[in-house]
Amino acid sequence: KTETQSYELICGLLARKAKGTVKVVLSREEVFFAHRGRPATWTRLKLGATRDGKLQAVAAEVVQRG
Image 1 (cartoon, rainbow, N blue to C red):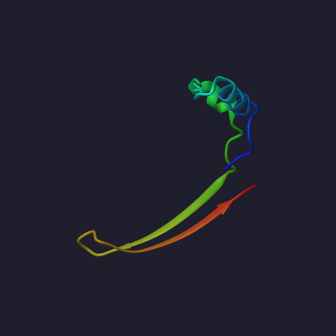
Image 2: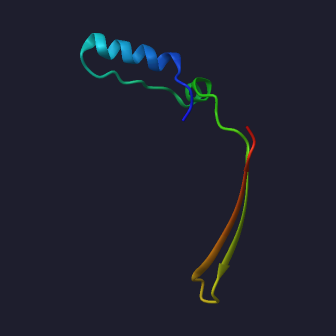
């Protein structure tokens, strides 16, 4: 869903060279640096339900910047 990162290309080349799989392990902090994230998103939901709590209707408005 995003562009290919350089470390993904390197892993592909290493896997080809090793004729096997390569596992990438990133810390939580490294994940934030490795990916560019997602654009800001605003969501408005309107739900309709019966008195006993059974969901009857859903309306959603989603706006994504970027």
